[in-house]
Image (cartoon, rainbow, N blue to C red; front, side, top):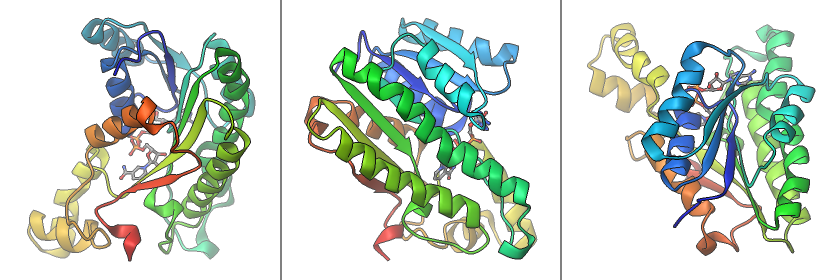
Length: 257
Ligand code: NAD
């Protein structure tokens, strides 16, 4: 399948899942807009490397996904938005009574409200182009809860709800809106936690993965960033035209429980 001529905007895409999805879309020929809030030389280098590797146009655009105006300007300023991947997200872990209100506000803004603002800016552009794909990177925590993650679980459940509404509002158009709900993904952040967890529990790294990190993931294996990239590419294909308003787990069986 070719995504040549399509422009993909991926929020929060200078690392982890966002970068993996941007790479997968660029590999299919899509022009990509990378984003984060940092605006460092490395951010721009990442875009240049993607353009080099895949022969597409790739740009880095700074925008803070905690700010509604930045969200809308990122999308509107791109000139075209055929594929919108709402990926930016942060986490904080604490009991509700100890959860800092400013962390609640930041997680709701970045993980939930940015999806609303970017989607609102993108849909008119997709309608004008006569084709569009919105892919929200939600989480298994959009479908199930865990203690101490109140803002994250609330935000991701909100993303799943918003996916249904946006999918229904565009159901008769050549636009689909879906959420991917990953379980634990092997990103550098998670990789770095493995030796520390093993030390903390006094167990081997394999045991730390199986018993602690992947306690809820029946496959006892991580989702890979590349798998999520392939899923996003599939959702952009014609074969996925009737998949809309769906929240699709990629979680080794977690949400079947
Ligand atoms: P990551 O920390 O590697 O990447 C997050 C990206 O978001 C970075 O590029 C960062 O710069 C950007 N970002 C953070 N705050 C931002 C802001 N205010 N404005 C713009 N960009 C901002 O994280 P990841 O693990 O790749 O997670 C990406 C998404 O996938 C998140 O929504 C996360 O909730 C979701 N997710 C991750 C996992 C996992 O196991 N890693 C599992 C399920 C869902």
